[in-house]
Image 1: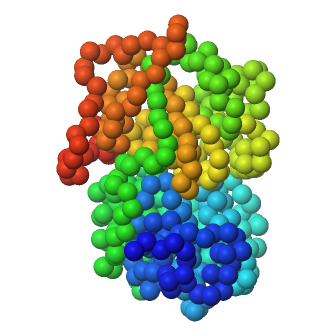
Image 2: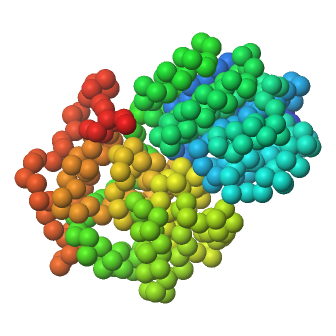
Image 3: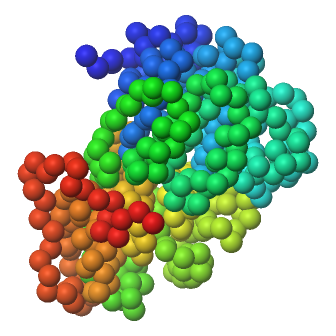
Length: 400
């Protein structure tokens, strides 16, 4: 039977008290399934869509076990934003235990990170590139890591971190607990698990490619030149916070500039922005200083902001899987949300890839004077009622 609270999951009384004070009362499905096995020291492969509470699913077992062990925990994540978000969540449950954390990410002061490492923090939250910098300069030592977390593992592989992860693994002790969390399960993840884990327990909450449950979706077919006008209309219709995705960093800068010219409070977050600029944009978006945040896919899994009313895909993503991660920024933790995508007339194939992945047809909406038809005459995707899981690919282009 599903647990209606955190009692009965094997969580220590001190952490239970903290969870109550933080008003975390009902565990999410991934937390219900992963926490008991994590506390038992088992290796775990956790598959769950974004926004389902994965950080506490591995954070609670890690903090509880480290209180009983001498070693340390290492959390590897793909992006700087996600590292800061994970660290923020972990600090909430380490506040009374004396377990210190450190964030090791690019764009931040190496000197300050070395100072923090000398204080012997018990948990390292790191991006692969910066952690390797510390290993090469002998400022970090991983020989006492008892617990390894690979968070958003599929995203790390998509971003080309496989060689760095393999390099980091050579610095870790063979006897350790490993927990791998991923929104999708491509073959590369299965291979990584076989190589680096011992009899892992698989915890799957939603089938690969499942979109957030309470997010409604629609698509506008619009020419590239008409996108700004349609955007202006939609921003007059929706009055809450908006996360807008651009495919390129130049596009993100151009869109943000256009929004500011329209007197909207907008910030941008992409790889051309410094770490301090990205942090200011994200904090400003969280606090309400900025109503609109324009982002590239670097932020698709690194933004944990409750109450985002609308995710707007100004450009469709290059990879259908990123569509699921983008729209998962709204409708988080059981709330409702909405996602709108702009597709140009020649992008029928991209829409079909997304429909295959999420196993449903996307409704096409129209605006007088702006909407156009798809150029291709091919029939749109029609989902089957009970499709066999094995027939689904990760988009028609497959994994690159």
